[in-house]
Length: 157
Image 1 (tube, rainbow, N blue to C red):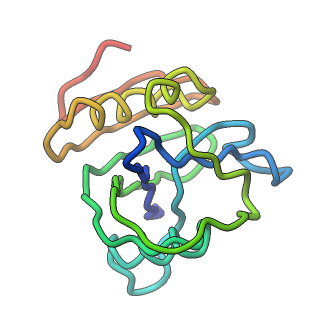
Image 2 (image 1 turned 135 degrees about the horizontal axis):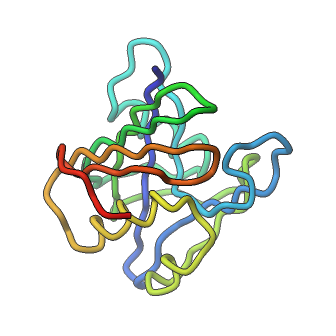
């Protein structure tokens, strides 16, 4: 199992910073729009990983963030992943180029229409609804979402 973080940074203009994953050839997120984040390093907490990954990928330093939930990804292709999901609305610094894709501020109303993983739409909706801390399990066969459970209860997909 691997642990990762993912953060959706929001500004005061009704926009979310997204990473369009178009730069790496063998990227499981190729052509998708996602938040920013990455894998834990040894001995890191979720918050330490979040702050490091956001700084590395964006050049921004988070000053206000919120831990929103844990997403468990189960796949027939990849190892199980526990993704620690955050949102942030406070930051300092200058946005810089990212070697994993193109960073872009996207209007919040547009975010659900962009190409992303099917399961991402579930947790993005929970974030938009300001849901309390949650545990979401997403099961994939290939690129197809085959099952989902929110706080242990199966969802219709």
